[in-house]
Length: 100
Image (cartoon, rainbow, N blue to C red; front, side):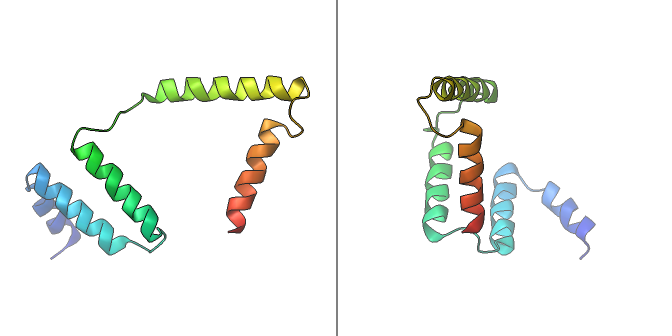
């Protein structure tokens, strides 16, 4: 069976069957980068979404809140309330995670 034939068959599935197929393909493709506790948390969150228990926040609101947090942190740095700038703090965190 060719890839195009497989895709045609997948498109003919009902939405629930397509979701199951996608989940199965993800498991096949899984390269093991998620730790068991991360996978458990992901499963828990996906189940909450499926049950309609998850609260979603629009991306625009998230970005607005993040910008406000950065502005407050920058103001704290300018007043001398912080010894490290917010940007340096983020860079340090990213470097720290990259070393793991």
